[in-house]
Amino acid sequence: AIVVVGESNSVLGRQTKQTSGERTGARGGICGSQATQIKILLQGSGNHTVRDLILVLSEDSSLDQVGVQMESSGNTVDNCDIGSPFTPNPMLDSDPGNQVGVEMKGDNNVLSNNYISVRRDLADNYGTKTIGVRSFGNDCLLI
Image 1 (tube, rainbow, N blue to C red):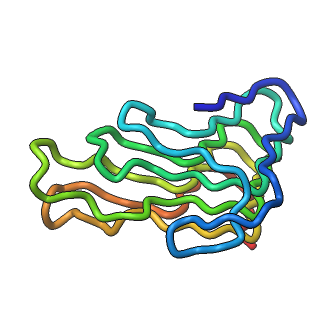
Image 2: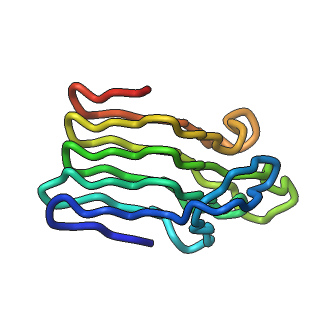
């Protein structure tokens, strides 16, 4: 996981042509692990930028997972691909955890030009929930 603290920091991917699952135009990538609950955590005074990344959540994790969690205010997540590319294996011994693409707990955060696709909702089978974007903050903007 990447934890960003302080003020006005950036996590930037590379602008190269790659392929991510069925999507093209990928940038830099952070792959999921069954043991990591949050891929990028934005804390501190805020005004952080996350741009041009692919964040892949693990499809087989029994833990709850979040692609980007914003605990500070004034952050921007731009041009990222956040998701779980596969459906979990129903034959696993453990139930899959919940998935959230982006969780905004701070105020005045901006999501722009992102592709967010979490695993299909398995509430009927396992009681788990998947959410693309969850906001607890005020004046957040989705473009």
